[in-house]
Length: 144
Image (cartoon, rainbow, N blue to C red; front, side, top):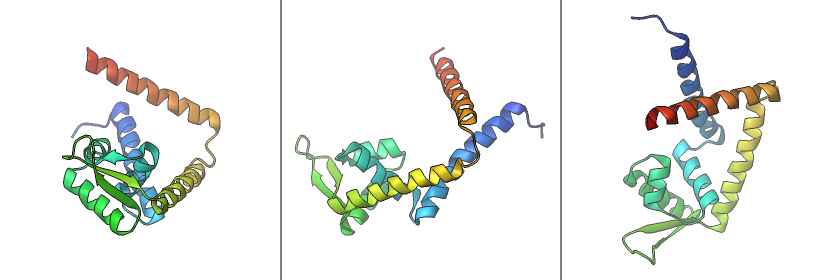
């Protein structure tokens, strides 16, 4: 096995932190990461097709349908056929779903603030700059 390079360590830490962050907040609020993502996505985007949810969240269509049906049974989401193309189903938050999603967003903000406790703003800006540069480099690689 080869020795870990600084690049290996950097990307292992970044990817590990991202994966852990997604799961940690979901555990914090007591629901699956996909449930959190669906509610927050519907809050942000409004009425959305199942296929758009599938693409945006990177999960299969059956999982999206199951989640949306669960939310519908809980009174958090309403569904209807897309009037422009009845092959598609649209999902939207109900007023109760809006309240739950609003609470999630506020809870997420407080959670993020606690995670960044002790990390000075200038260090946060340095990290953001590094991540922007890595993403720009990735785009350049893909386009060359």
